[in-house]
Amino acid sequence: MNKSKLTAAFLALLKRDLTLAFRHRAELFNPFLFFILVVTLFPLATGAESKLLQTIAPAIIWVAALLASMLSLDAIFRSDFEDGSLELLLLNSHPTSVLVLAKVLAHWLITGLPLVLIAPFLALFLGLDQDVIVLLVITLLLGTPVLSFIGAVAMALTVGLKRGGILLSLLVLPLYVPVLIFSTNAIEMGASGLPVTAQLWILSSLLLLSITLTPWPTAAALKLSLS
Amino acid sequence: MSSPPFFYKTAGQWTPWLAGLSIILLLVGLYGGLIYAPTDYQQGESYRIIYIHVPAAWMSLFVYVAMAVSGAIGLIWRIKLAEIVTVCSAPVGAGFTLLALVTGSLWGKPMWGTYWVWDARLTSELLLLFLYLGVMSLYSAIPDKRVASRAVALLALVGVVNIPIIHYSVEWWNTLHQGPTVTKFDKPSIDIRMLVPLLIMAVAFKVFYVWSLFLRIRVELIERERNTQWVKALVQTK
Image (cartoon, rainbow over all chains, first blue to last red; front, top):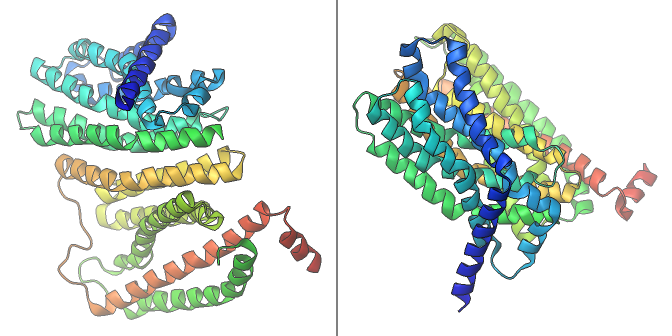
């Protein structure tokens, strides 16, 4: 009885966030466009030498994804904080951590998944091989949700602040480092034909850790920000 | 014990002793390290920077853990003093981290031929510095100091869970990207005459940390409790 109520609340919140996002289509595309733009800048800056681009393509795509997902963090809690619905969310009887999980999941579906879907095309432009592209997509699928979960903690800590932007990047980017290292390393190793199962297992465990551990500090931080 | 007026008074009595002890230990350790310890047969005299570098690097991690532990205590039992310990530890820890970075790169110049190498230890130390700076700027960004110190405690806890992950990922990244660089302490043994000054310096740095922590806590206490009776009484008697 109680359990099914919680599931219903989880799904309702997920649906609400997705609907809200689709009603604001322009905002929906912003991180996505940012991602494409940043990737486009690199060939312009390094020159269109295909050999160089091919070697640094995984790094370019991953760093761009990192920045795009960091910029999109604001959307998780900001508007809910401003119109007061976040407060209602904390006041209801369901555990906040589960509701946070729904919000972060919705956020990833809106901002993370599009990046994963567009990445193969960008990788193609940068001249990556097909096998490597598959690997890139796998690492993005495993890695970008981790970014959303970790980012949610920092976002919850800074949501009450007027100018949280640069502070947010200072809080978040050092914590993103492991994901970046294991993902790009997996792609690099895969490109030279070495086994990458270890890196993928580590990325998966980072994902599981972040799903299970981060909702608590996020919920606690939200309570602090609203106190 | 953790009541602000009591702690303020006790810490005030302790500080001269801590100051004296840490200065004596620092002088003894430096004498031991710079003069008494023998010259290294491989690195010559330039290895002597370890007497600053290594204790600073140890402290950089130690202070972060201390910060997280006191943060947890503050969050769980709502002890004001524990929150203040967390907040006041951050700048000291950041200082140690910066010191470790600077001395590390100074040592790198004669050894590696360049000031900066993307060595695993140096890189994770740099990330640790960013974690400290994040804690400090989060604290200064939130106007309500009670809320700010609890936010900082949360952040320190998240950070302390992440530090091992970051550390091992950087180590992994480094060992696969470039050949192993000179590792300083993987030598099977270190001469006892070199080791003793190093340990003295480590203790001296710890005492120094407690000393500066006490100074900071006292200032922070007066600032936070400025509207209470005991601070007003304190100001009037002075």
